Amino acid sequence: MWPLVEHVLGSHETAGLAVAVVREGEVVSRGFGVRDLGTGAPVTPETMFHLASVSKPFVATAVVSLALARNGRPPVLDLDAPILAWVPEFTLADGRAAEVTARGLLSHSSGLPDVSDYGWYDPQLGDDALSEFARSLSGRRLQAQSGGPGSAFSYSNAGFELLGLLLSRATGTTFENAVRQQVLTPLGMMNSTFMRSEVPTQLAASPHVGMPLAVPDGAYPYTRRHAPSSTLHSNLVEMCRWVDAHLGSPEAAAESSDGPSARLDPALLDLMWRPEVSVGEPPWEDQAALGWFVGSYLGHRTLNHSGADPGFGSKLILVPERRVGAVVLANSNTVPTEAIAAAALDIALADAARSVTSGVTSGVRPEESGAGLAALRALLPPVVGPIAETLATSGPDAAAAAFHQLAGVEPAEFDLDDEGFINAVWGAIELHRTSMVWPLLRVWTALRPDSSAAWTMTGWAHQVDGQLDQARSLLERAIDLDPQNDDAAVILSNLPSA
Image 1 (spheres, rainbow, N blue to C red):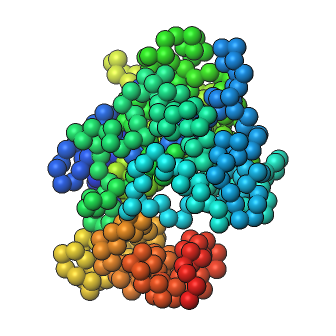
Image 2: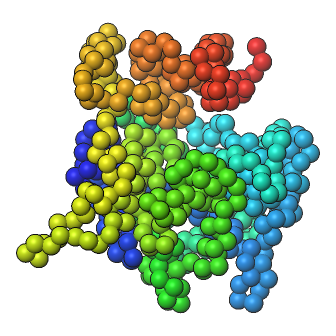
Image 3: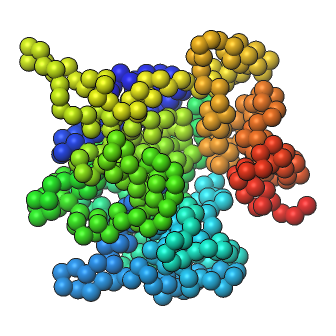
């Protein structure tokens, strides 16, 4: 596995990443690359990454645990009751706030719209940040179909901010302390935290955005306003404890909770892993459960979650029946975290039929592996890497010439799709550091004038810079090129009327 990961590190304009695989209690883990390109400090299994949306299963675990009777005490929460009892400041323009339940929020089936601007550039750090966020939703409306059996799936980070506030109210402490008390401390995850200020500087991974990659000056994806959906910081050592807590043997449930063998209550896991609504995005996201996505891989049920915020990416996959899990953490948006995790699962799930010669295990045979390992081997580096490097050293004309030269190579040596360009620019734009990507945006639109994605990102950059007329014109162009471009439509809908 490690040579394949090293190949990705060298071909995908990557700062650093960390990979761990757990199988039946056995752990292998390793860091690659650097925590910060400026300092050159290496990534290790102890390096702390921002996990983005992989935060959500932790929040869900804390919330759902309060809905179970424990130690003879009745449940604190009713997952099917309106959250208004705990979050009375939550209102909606359509008067339907009473329809919103914890179960609907946990499964992304409440109908609550998603967040459109995370405000990383203006972090809210007070204890009232989540309450103020709840009040800010007063102008929103639920989607037409929401609540009850058969509801439509619609991913909503905003729903998890409300869950964080509910958790705070139900436990009588801050959201961050509540998750620490309910989940992190009992599982021995003593360094993991939702508070960025608690991450030791000497262990912290820096976000890398733009292309060529750079650490944005004075910007980081953190605000307590969006802590529940996004801001868990952890490392491979403690994420392996988290995986083992879900996959450990039943006997481990009775053992001390201050070691890696501590296991979550099977009744809690059964409730959380039960599908609630169809998503329809195989193999990983066939259905949504409570804080997890349910899928299937190599014939086995999987539980997983992905994360992506500016400068960070993450992937967590569990295969409960085989007691296998994979964790991939990265400090740039250019790392194919899902492909790496799938390849790791192929190796971990392969039957133990191994050729042994002179006492040396040769490893998994190619015919025993699944599609993930083959896909990682065949993965082409995005063309945006050499284009951005040429742009930085020789200017836009040379970058355009380099693109056409590389695009004409047969067989293809680079992935020419827009996705590489998107990953190179969106993080800097979301952090309001558009100056890091304007040169690349201009080259991209010149090379791909018919690309809806290119005009979407460029229009978004104009919107961030306050150039609203230009933003509106380019976003309308993006929609003309692709009427199904939901990203452009959302950004356009948030612009003030002309």
